[in-house]
Length: 386
Image (cartoon, rainbow, N blue to C red; front, side, top):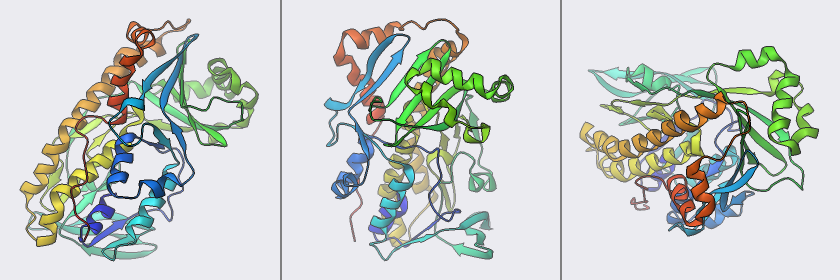
């Protein structure tokens, strides 16, 4: 997204992707109203919505025997009052198609960065391998958007705080049938939590487990894990045998951390490379896109005119640090006060009093909708197309 925005503003931009394509499963697939608003401002929303996707105007959950609406997006001050569900590889391919309309955009696939070019204490570019060939690229600015295990962040020796996470997530897929529920569906009961994302012909499932518990779960056996799924979501009972082995189940190690400083001269970290988010609320991809919009807004002109300074990079962190802190604070509270307690329980889960308020006073559902759908300090496209 940042490469697209900068190229659109006339900045010569090269995006490096270490894989040969974007077809990797188990990634964030929720495109929230804040991101859809960015697409509207770019004039590409209609084209995006023509792509196959599902629309969720509400987030529903089932806690114990009670089904309730957790968030209602119909009142948000945005053009789209829903979350769009689309595999992330389709979203990335769409953005690349839009970006390639500009001669200032270049994408190199199968190109892995292995180190930084540093001279006189400043970062001047990157080196790595493209296919099997070594390469070097010099640039006015290197942007690390390579995720929570960022190699660029490590090479730049940027350090941060790890705020801990009491959970991990097991990701797997099960087939979807026409009579299944059509909305994103979270289920909580008997010390178990599972989230299901609708991908049209199958469910992308996230089964929440205590931190570090995966090996213990494996020891109890695959049949017991299948039973846990069926107990929590009985409509999947006739499909759990689709999990034929542990290779069908992937472990997502949850991390919540944030860099103290997101930049050095010639380098900026954004997205999970700057602030790894919990999966709570599914907001990580959208927060990263907000980072990209703010970065383009602040840095496009200095990059165009060759006046970029470390102060400009600091402005990006100053702009985006509060939303990251606020969101992580919210996620950590949910993890520690709700999820940890649920996972420690064994009996029928009762509806917590805050959720009872959502059930009795529907207008309160606008609060979680605002937090999830828009977030703190939403960004708007300020760059001009050149």
